[in-house]
Amino acid sequence: MLLWVLFNITMREAAFVRQNKDKWVKYESLLQNNRVLSPEQLSDIYVELSDDLSYSKTFYPKSNTTKYLNGLASTAHQKIYRSKKESGNRIISFFTKEFPSEFHKHQKQLLLSFLIFLGFTIIGAFSAASDSAFVRSILGDAYVNMTLENIANNDPMAVYKEMTETDMFLGITINNIRVSLMAFSLGVLAGIGTIFMLMQNAIMLGSFQYFFYDKGILWESGRTIWIHGTIEISVIIVAGCAGLVVGKSILFPGTYSRLKSFTMGIKDGLKIVVSTIPFFIIAGFLEGFVTRLTGMPDFVAILIILISLLMILFYYVYYPQYLLKKSKNEPGTNSI
Image (cartoon, rainbow, N blue to C red; front, top):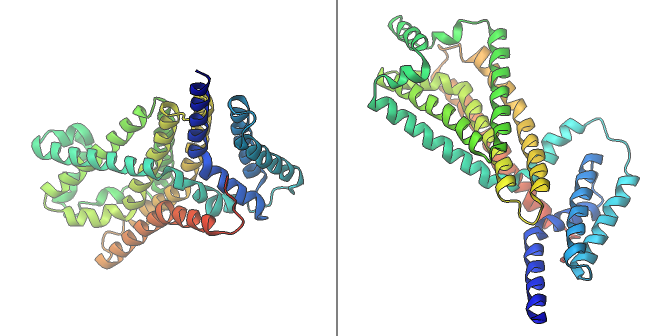
């Protein structure tokens, strides 16, 4: 019986180490390579290491894992009290280093958010193709009638010219940030609320695009709408990722208590949402000041769309992976 108990403890410790090893190695590298870390980064590292150390002390008090974590936590503690005042480039550091260096952890949630959005977009287009009344039920009679009138007047994208540039820029930006915050906050419903938000926006997009396809102006609408829509839709998907991160923290806490996991999920999700704000500002600027220029040459519109797409893919997909590989290749990292 005693051997069985010891075996169980050993297996649980191995699982604990396996689940957290990458994080510990990363923190060890950050603490030992004389990097300039902000007080908030040091605090976050210390809190997480302290939580892991507390767990290890409880279940494996005399193990090498506990000794290792105790050393790391002590190093973090010393650095906190040696660190200087926070520098003035805190915001720049967040967007260029802090956030992207952590976002690689959430690539699966980002992919899932994209697949959910894509799936419901296809459903929206299929529903619009199957039922002529579906578009009106989603977009509203007023919008559909106005667009039909604009098409008849040979200016189908006139809706983007009705408001002044500044009013449209501010209104669209604020609304997009609101949608982003809702997608994130509804993650507290185990991710179901976030999926509902993605569904709403995706079905609207699918039916919207099919409506223009049905009227024979898909290209004209697409090259105009996606000038701002490339960033806008992409970042809504990123906001959906934030909500799914929160949902995952509730459903799959791992070795953490559910409350601790939820707290970490909220913090990570909020960082993701904050990262989207500059992109929503760019999207709002494009919609307010550029999209209305419907007479611009096609190659200019396509260039803006491609640059927008590359910006999103670089910042949320390539750059986090690049920073991860860079940190793994740096010398001075010891194994557990």
